[in-house]
Image (cartoon, rainbow, N blue to C red; front, side, top):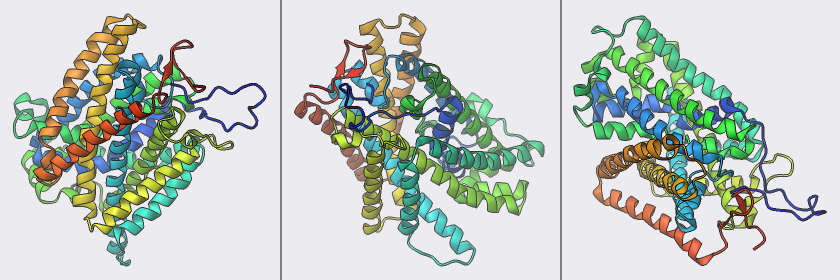
Length: 489
């Protein structure tokens, strides 16, 4: 589904643009995706939890397993991308493959899932900034004030041209990845701890010990946002080549970086020592590792760069969400004003403002409810996102298989049947484990887990209801290029 309305001759000057523009190459898009994955945040927060609650020193192998599953998924995802131009990503795939009703249900599910991710990160960044300020003698202020300040900066950048966000994310990403790689090099260069470099991740028996299902849930959370390769299609320099390259490269970079860095973290303390430290001081594990192997300056840098990592994730998810709203505005599923592009910045400026307001409401409600920014805001909203995003990928996998089965647009058996089917099986297993372990992800409350499940199902059903009540929303015209939206109905 393209994002541009068909404009009658002679009216172009007076008609607001409905198409985004940019010259993003594979590297720039990978920056967006990897920044959304928040590498330092994952290493500092998720990895210790995966080690402590998952399969211990073998946890790094979980990233390899998830990378393999998602690479299979990406084969069909990128094969179908050339037939689905537009910035809706998962929901446009489901619309083409399964149908308009399921497509809008997927769109609404994506909106709530990525909004939940943003809410989680706003809680974390508010607490992280306050900790940094107070540790250097500054005053302690409520976490939500820092969150709203961060939100204002994200909102300004999101309003501007995408190339500005790309440059900001590139700088922040290089810094946070750089410090982690320095730590990795120091650990590997010194041969790890007293017991040497860990071999647990290479032993199947170790991988299946403990709770490998929980380990895989924490691991898959590190890949949230890689869908952005397709979301930025309209702003890519050469979409048909850029999007597939960016998708494969992003998955390999994310998976390889996490596997290497988590392996170095385990090796720094030894198998038993890593599990003990991850259980007793998960939030300080990366800082202690940096201080022990690089020096106290590195420990301070990690604390600062953790904040920039969180900010980069917020900016990237803001851009993804505003483009979802932009696409839905053009498809008439949301008010059409959301589908307007800024005449100067060529950005989804109205969708960006709406997204900022939505995030502010979420932070405000969390603050009024007195939720802890880390143990409740971050943990609970991340739990919502974990289930929602894996469900999105399952729906997209089904859509890919159905689409190529029905249209025969691509007859390559590997690209359209075998690889997507293997990816679907792997994702279904991940979804099952995520749902089964959701109570653990939200503090052990089965009641809260059930509420989250109801909210996600109700949101999907809400999208289906919009499709029923608005018959012209998100329809695809297959008479021209198979992708033009019926704007003149």
